[in-house]
Length: 130
Image 1 (cartoon, rainbow, N blue to C red):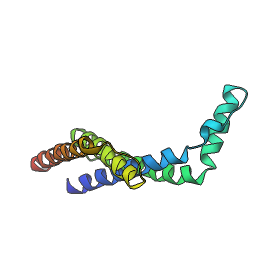
Image 2 (image 1 turned 45 degrees about the horizontal axis):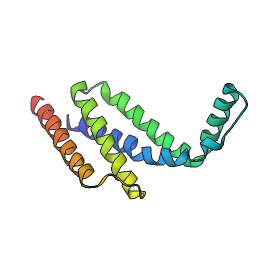
Image 3 (image 1 turned 30 degrees about the vertical axis):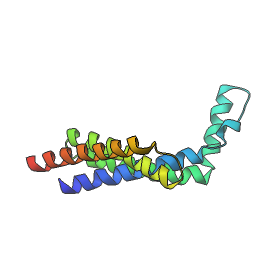
């Protein structure tokens, strides 16, 4: 179970750590304008996938999805989903903060601590069952 928990933590780090970079990589997409919806979609996809600031975090994010998919085959869903989703949120906040984004002050820090407490309880109860 410990290996699965580490894999889930890695997934959360890959997903959450790339979210702020994906947000930064999409800056400027609102200036892409085409005449009809089909050309607009194609132009936006081209903008994103020719933009290294978007493409690199996207590939790391998708590698997290691959690890998640492989880990789900041998992990209890009642552990995988809450651990991954809550830690993804934490990694997104922390990475955003490192990039200079505001994270919401004391309430956000309290929320992160409570989230970590909840994840710890999930992991301890899961490891205790094995």
